[in-house]
Image 1: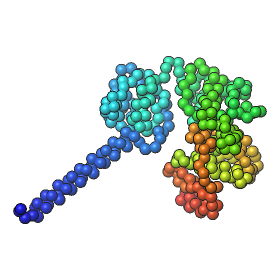
Image 2 (image 1 turned 45 degrees about the horizontal axis):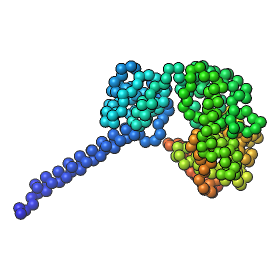
Image 3 (image 1 turned 90 degrees about the vertical axis):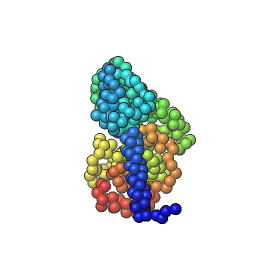
Image 4 (image 1 turned 135 degrees about the horizontal axis):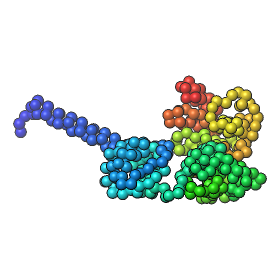
Length: 351
């Protein structure tokens, strides 16, 4: 065998480095492509109506969706459609596209087809209070006004089996979702459809057996879910943790201290609370009063409803916001630990 030479070793080293660089490049390319095809996290806000023109090619549809932020890259999306064999897609108005969808999610919307003639899509946002819900409906459905919807609620014709006897306040009992209504649907029909959808979801989750499962009424669990919905951060497990904090404090007859409830009682959804507002007694002041507020404070999502009826076990009594990006909380059973984390978050400008 000939002896090794410096030149041979140099060639081998260069070849190895070249292969390493190529492997890193290919890996980065695969990672980049995978991120574009399936972005991390859930889709963002709805983008509104997207009109696919008659005769649109796959390429033009892909570019159109990229321009409004539904998909990350039009050319890659068009290629993905070709590889998966999806399509062709029907022309018409689509109302269920959201920002930053995965390619499969966007294809799913396209394959579901456009809205039929005479149909109106209405999206009700999770966590919205009933006043906000009425505004959202009126903004999206040209056939009804906020006044029409208020009259329907006041008439008592819109009902739910989960509504406590003696009240007509449907706060918390209209399921937040995307609905398809006829363009001539009445206010009563719209609201009853949403109430029936909430009833069906609650039945599926076992809310009819709430007393047996949780020792609390179904309405109390819906109220708990609404509090968790308003208070939660991005991590999906936080709704359950917040529900458990609420139950632990209720069991110990301690005030819940949930400022979202105080804001609701003041007719607001955000903003700083003054010392006077915090100290003024009222049915929604959970810093002063023990127990749950008298009604839900918004329309809870399915995730929040699931958390309220099946909260994880835990001894947490306190939580504090420790990050805004993404919003997330620190949970503890120790007041001193809570105070330390709160001080740290304030020092970092979290709130």
